[in-house]
Amino acid sequence: MGNALRILTTHAGSLPRPKALVEMYVRLSRREPVDPARFAEAVEQSTRHVIERQLEAGIDIGNNGEQARESFFTYVQHRMSGFGGQSERPIMRDLTRYASFLELKLPDFSRTMVSLMNAPKAIGPVRYVDRSLVEKECADYRRIAGEQSSRFTESFMTAASPGIVASAMLNEYYKSYDEYVLAVADALRTEYAYIVSQGFVLQLDCPDLAMERHTSYVERPLAEFGDYIDLNIRAINRAVEGLPRDRVRMHVCWGNYEGPHTLDVPLEDILPHFYAARVGALMVSMANPRHAHEYRCFARHPLPEEMRLIVGAIDTTTNYVEHPEVVADRIERAARAVGDPRRILAGTDCGFDTAAGLGEVAEEVVWEKLRALRAGADLATRRLFE
Image (cartoon, rainbow, N blue to C red; front, top):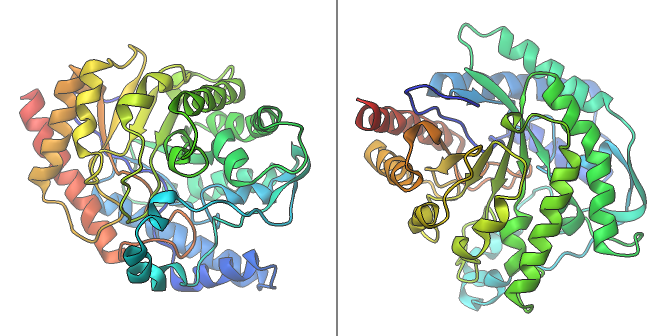
């Protein structure tokens, strides 16, 4: 995950899926039949497309855009045992706080998409039982990326964190949440180790570490949420034990949706907890209007020496395309707060299609945003290093 005297660019993982592939994922999520050959061809072509577009946009550290998965965490049900039925997950409280907002956005909530609020739940022992899917995903990505005329500086592969699985795929089997999240960590260790063994950087997606405050912990004391963060980070450390920390990065966000976010927990209150994670980089949402000011937290709470910061410099919930000067300003402010631009990378706040059909940014605009990220990183590089 290194960079020399240049700000490297990356993103948070998911990229737009074509409509035909989204429709197939929705049918699969409803346990409806899909032609396997047609599905495999759609995944192949969409993976090739997003790799090509990332390279064209100037992304340094790229991936497969999660085209082989229906969402950033429910995919584990196809690789792990113990899941079934349907969770009834509470909705983020800021969405229900404003009736006029719900009225305005209701058509968006009724779109055809893979649901993240009604994921399967734990109804039996959670075990990692089928590594073939992650093996194929990694092999297909390596093959397609290798066929391109240009190359990424490095590649990453995303994976759900133990905490988001245990929080969004509710527990009906284990005696406690603690027991459940540690069992998930033990299961996911298989996937994490395989991704790193294939030469990829492992990105752990951890919205639970921020978003759960205004989802499941909204009526509970902040100290209890802090204990929850600490437990989930212990689960992460258990799952990545033995892996080089510089091959693991952790992505944290407050929910990748366009909403009020007035109940988001301040980064100031949770950032120190993150530093216990045995990871080499922390990726944080810092571009959206609710959290753009929080780069200052890194001056008050310095990054551990072994960590880098991936600055969220692109908002993934709006079709406004950031001006490169705006991107550069965001990068430079974070670099000054951290104190060393060599420890900075530029990224996005979150993914662009966290579940099939859930993206809020038009595909063409996504690539414009990634080009703006590259242009802004180039501006920041000249100002910080020259």
